[in-house]
Image 1 (cartoon, rainbow, N blue to C red):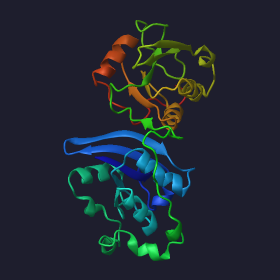
Image 2 (image 1 turned 180 degrees about the horizontal axis):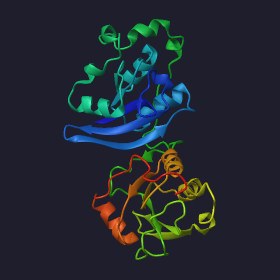
Image 3 (image 1 turned 30 degrees about the vertical axis):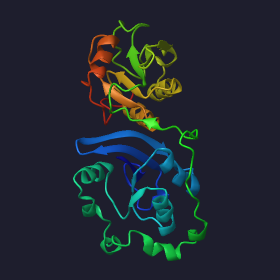
Image 4 (image 1 turned 90 degrees about the vertical axis):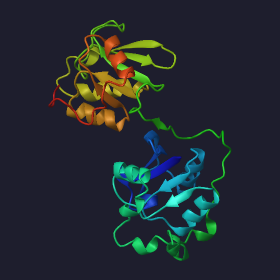
Length: 273
């Protein structure tokens, strides 16, 4: 089942309309997998509703939602589970174990049976709710950022390297790496991007390097170490970081493909790395 969590950063948004991210997951009894994320901060109500059908969402999990929005989604065949709060991890775990009611927002248990319809009579938009009907192959105006936790999927990967081939030594530094190997995992194409312009910067090398790899359209980075400012910049660019101590870029990539590298959740060096 495809499930959308209407989030504000890494937690469910208190109000559906205040969410800034749609996190799209595939939820099964055996586990969950994030398919991608969609930034929605700059979208209007109609576009937000349409996106849920565009990505074939079967269930929306959210905080408070007005009755007219819930009615529109219901007519589009999307089940809505409102009045839920908590981190995305807790919500996904509750979905798997059918314990979502335990995450009901404080003071909202009595609204469960009405599932948001109480708000419809007060909603000024109730008579003007658009229908989120789209052609299945309609081009999306947004980019669904793939989830790079699932190693081995088609993606572009940047690897810090001291040379221009996969046999080159893995460069342990990110911001001041000699260069980046940009590997297209789908086609196998390999591109080298020189990073010499950042080697002697007194500060800001990590941020500049993050912009450099983001311009290449990568979704994952394999390197030795990353400092705090660079890690923040990479996270904002939806670029996952994987640390490796492999001697060569090729061996680091092979370990990534085997699922042996864990996605980093924090920088591992102090500033000016």
